Amino acid sequence: MKTFAYFDSTHEFPEEIIIAAQMNPYKILGKADFSTELADQYIPQFICANARSFLNQAIEESSNWEGIAIAHGCDATNRQFDIWDQHVKTQFLYYIHNPLKTDEIAQHFFIGEIKAMILALESHFNIKITLDQLEKAIQVSNQIKILLQNLSKLRITKDISNSEYFDVLKFTMQNPKKKVLPYLKSISIDWLARNPFPINKHPIFLTGSDITHSLWFELLEKVNLRVVRDDLSIGERYFATLIPTDKDPISNIAKYYLNIPRSSTKHPTNPRIKYILKACKKEKIHGVISQIIKFCETFAYDTPFLKSQLEVIQVPVIHLEREYTENIDQQISTRLEAFVELLEQPQ
Amino acid sequence: MYTVGIDIGSLATKIVLMKDGKIKALLENRSLHNFTAIGTQLFHQILKDNNLTSDDIGNIYSTGYGRHSISKLTSNIITEISAHARGAQYFYPKVQGIIDIGGQDSKVIKLNPKSSTVIDFQMNDKCAAGTGRFLEVMADALDIPIENLGNLALQSKSPVQISSTCTVFAESEVIGHFAQGTAKQDIAAGIHNSIAKRVASMVKRIQIVEPIVFCGGVALNPAVKIALENELKLKLLVPKYPQYIGAIGAALIAKERFKNGRV
Ligand code: SF4
Image (cartoon, rainbow over all chains, first blue to last red; front, side):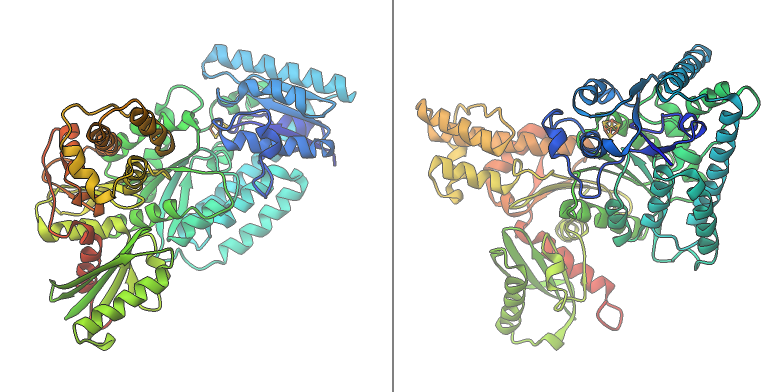
């Protein structure tokens, strides 16, 4: 199956179009070795390393992909399309605008964007993307989301490590959906048979910039912090809601992407905070880890508001700024250990 | 019961021997990037000086940057945050905030006024500004021993402004002032104001209130205390042995967690 890659700084790109076009939508997440050197020639280092690592991977691996789409994610990265246009070798590079708002005008606009992208794909690849194919793609997407929702719930009751959860999400976003469905079913059987949630671990909510490598999840695991809820794009944002099926498939897709759990890249901030507070109350979360990758200001700006709202419901929160590195950061490790000690203090 | 707290900092290692929660002996040495050797050596030395053997010690806790490096010796570890919070309470039970400036890091800790537990903390980023290292580099740039930097600053009537927060750029700025013939004491005072500004921004972020304990090796420098007090517009309490607060806290926690055996 042919692979079509996409770069969206959150969960923005309507991958159902690519599924309907009989290609594998592959979310670009940077290479395993954390390399950014090639991209550093074109993007200054005060831009987040996530974006630089995505470009780096594209420069190196674009020949494996039929085409690439960039969706409007955060404002720090949206104009990087021009850099990709100049320096990434590909037959088909496309930019899709995702509106910042969610109202009717925004939905109408996004429907137009989806239709335009379908036309561009049909014309470039000489294919036809029918409404029927789009409906089938929605079905597949929803099946995957339901499986992920069920798996995610097991994090609260079973012994599922942080990186196992991350690995499942990453696999889902980078592999053909035909392969993903049986894979998720086998993971469900495995996870259901797991031991109960370990008593020495603290259930936490993880929020902030997207985490693209399992190393950071392992670091949390090492200090006994277990991510049982999150609002990351390589996380709950991808599967928390299902694509509606009540209207025509294009309107349904548009509605879905504008109504998933919000990220800091969209306005206003309140829905994102509400999602976090609700999860904290529902799952008896011990604490919240709010982290950003340097220099993701998009998420950094939300932090004081998030902190003040968590104070109201008395859930401890720690905010961390992390590097993009394959090395364990000793300072971050100390802060996390101190946070665990704070959680374990007799009240 | 005897307990020992060892604070292995990036620059200095401090060890405290306590008996029933009272300080019996204190020792320190440069860490010299050999945390295991220095920690072990100080432990044996403090035992020898006090005619004790390892079996006499109920519990041993380590803290600080190198806290994981002497796991063969210690019963457990504790982070600098918890250790400093506990150590500061030993001298000032009603403390609500702590500012600790060590060799290569600085931290601000906020305590719950009712339960005395830690409710928030800030640590400096990977950056020497706002730490003892900043003062060391500046003393070198001024070509004076670090011990004299504080007293020199106190003689200043008109401190210069050091606007760079980065240690490397601040050093160039200091050299620039020097070249222009600015008096050393005015540059020294500017340096102290600069470190105070940097640390004050961390204090403001979590809004600690008095009583505030100022500890860490840099608290031995009276000019930093004054600069911080001026910047924050509040009074700071410097305990006896400010550089040992982490080790004292670790030894106290070691005592509190002792339950018929080392834990
Ligand atoms: S990490 Fe932040 S700055 Fe980087 S792409 Fe994502 S939202 Fe944008």
